[in-house]
Image (tube, rainbow, N blue to C red):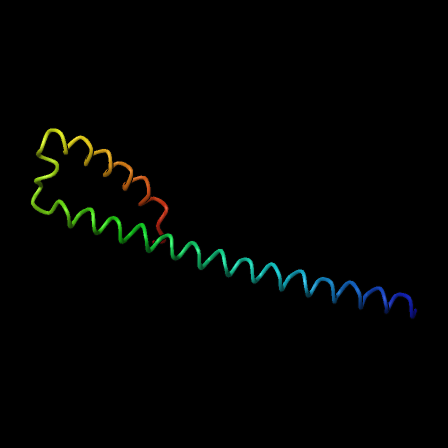
Length: 82
């Protein structure tokens, strides 16, 4: 009976530390994801702000590059938190 109590104590204590460690890692990853989402949103707003008048997209040389940047931004927008 004493052996069983010792084993259970060790298992419960170990489980506690493992779960605590996993929760801390999860919180750090959540913070990282939130920061990434905020950065993507800020880039999207800045890109739209730059071309409010449509002058970049209308230019032939810059327009191609700007359209490609917009495609990349649209792909990134899928990773934002909603």
